[in-house]
Length: 290
Image (cartoon, rainbow, N blue to C red; front, side, top):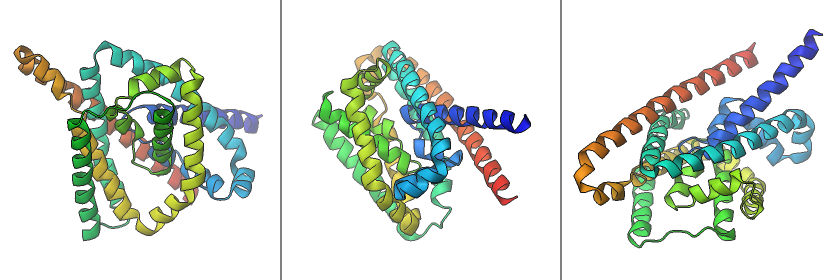
């Protein structure tokens, strides 16, 4: 009886963890891959992607409930973000910026776990400069991607990468391209014209890039992780709603204070969430050692 009760609790835990990963995937600044890693789900997923037959034989039962949870969190929270962006996009963007900023110390720590050579620091700087230039050129040229099949494929590709590469947040880039609100609406309303290309691109990314990414991370973990960090910092800066300040010059000071408070609140919330994930990761590692 006790064993059965423990099994039920384990299933519930897998579903809850999946929900949190799904919410993390839709939430800008939070990496689905990082959450998978924190909950001990990352390695089983890579095992399945690297060797499907052997991996599924070993992990299929757990993954059923984790995937169920991911779907619930992903679809459910998409509606929440759509609603929030509709209320006040600039304020919500500042909260998101704070959420992203709060993860930076954790990404920095994770990037240095395998050492921090001069090449790692150079890769961080080059990544930051390159992404900033690309984003500035795109923004200056007024290039905004229009919602559609190709755009949803791109979003799915980015989301697939966010699960494979810990620390990479796909939603941050999707926000920059102006696709986030429309995509969130499509997901929350179960619009198949949005969900199908997203799902196809995520699946293709898993199948085609997981082995290559695992190899690259194993061989060049520090350099790749620092590149991701440079990317995160650059996208965070580019998300700041400068246009909303210039549109209301009489309220610049008030809006700056509001934006600053939102950024700080988001950063604090994100920081404590990262601490909680690290505690979970440490607990899982301690149990594995016993």
